[in-house]
Length: 84
Image (cartoon, rainbow, N blue to C red; front, side, top):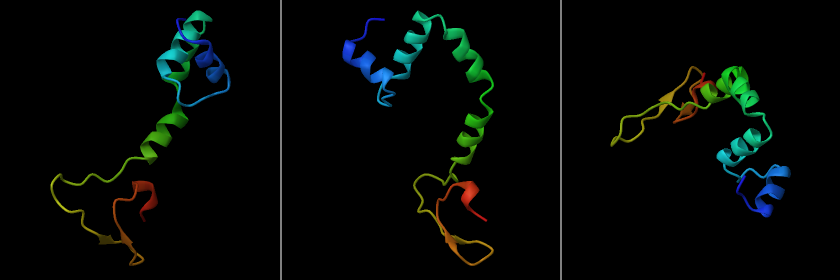
């Protein structure tokens, strides 16, 4: 795999700072790289989480304007799923 012993230990512990490429190499060495492709194709929950984090786009170079929602609360740059 061409990684240090320390990196392998951190991977086994689930260290989030390990590069995804290192995990992919480990899967390939273990013969599980096709399993990852299958998971990535049908990751419906991941897609929903990604969509939920989309922010309202504002034009560059302009100050972000506040707007009031139906209850009169001011919303500024909140994710779409948090706005009413």
